[in-house]
Image (cartoon, rainbow, N blue to C red; front, side, top):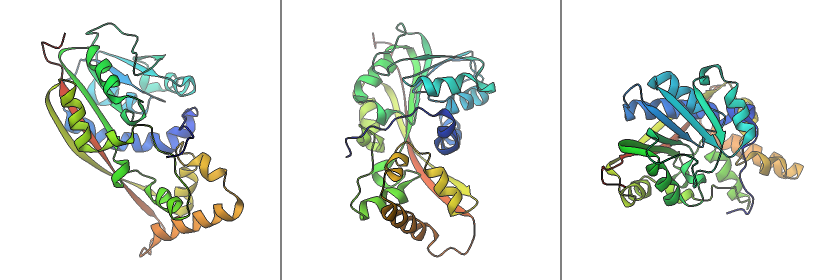
Length: 266
């Protein structure tokens, strides 16, 4: 793993690259979750508000709080027309600034693997949710090839380059998610797999979008010119192999988990 840290500061860039993927996966996730309307939600690691907006649109919540460490992302979230209901603030997933039992539901959308200590982050989620409330998350299955930019990561490795990974990437595996939720004492723990596709008009559209990605963009842009071209050519060959269409359809896979806070939690 690289010693570099994945940073999310550009809300507009995140929207073009990962925000659209987040909505695709988030739609499937919310279909599976089937959460009641009118609840009080906490969106942890809300970023630029891509999932927060979807949550408001799909679940008709009574109220939503969004928390994230990046002020740049939060500034973008606050400007979203669909996020007017939400109240955003800067904060740490492992030390939430909310009282016990403040929410009906808490969610991490594409976030749990960025929490340095997932078990502590989950304990905080559970603490701020009322007994019987919902605690859920979904995350790209990075280690088993589910990440939207997996072709770039694989080509990097073939060239001896080490792509940046989240600090707690292991928790993105479905079995580990399930174990983490069970170990936290949550009830009725269930997991599922989310599969989505995104269509790009051509490879160049895909490539320029990928450069906005916080996990690969900085590494790619720092490459020497010959390595940059070799990487780009190698990725294009991987993705366009056997395809005669100008459009490029990219598949991705995420894992999701949900559980409920027991009445005896406190």
